[in-house]
Image (tube, rainbow, N blue to C red; front, side):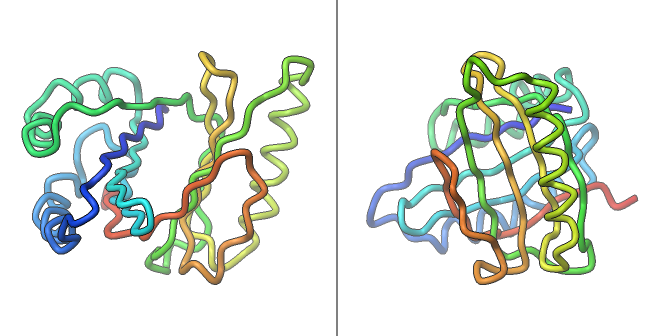
Length: 183
């Protein structure tokens, strides 16, 4: 699987109602989209970022999306943006009965001396512990082999239920909508 995210910096005076309307209209195009495992429509009010987060079944599905009309709509509306991608190492669902309202994306550098097998086990163990929390909808751990970074992405019931981040870099988001296969 491949995780992918782009962030669109909106002007300070941008009416967030336009983003909410866009999500309301376009989210239907992603509900049950072929090759898509997960899409979170995300917004960070403080930094005025619209930043959807995707999980694709494979690289070819992600590439197909970036070259098709759905992404062309993003380019036509906001201009072409940088798209980050990561290899998914672990993805697991917690309480799928809840509707997530808060997301957290964390990025940490992986030290050159870090033993990757131990690092991956530590991440998997931490994820297993997090999955015990009934306020967690989904948690993902992914890897950027170009920058030697780990990304953790989690969806929570609300901001109050999410743990405090101690990562090098983290961005909190409001979840506007989640699209996933219905089956």
